[in-house]
Length: 68
Image (cartoon, rainbow, N blue to C red; front, side, top):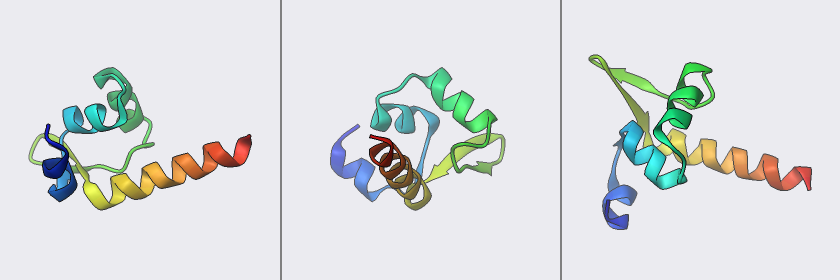
């Protein structure tokens, strides 16, 4: 996915979130299943709101940096 497309998206798919975080799709699914990743349902599909995803990443990054 082009970087500018990811930056302008309002919602990410599971595949896009996996690509942006460089983790596997099963890891994204696990985060969704354990309510670690903010999601919304659109019909029968999961979507990750871009603003909440970025905030979640910032929170995870600051938590990780605080542990060192």
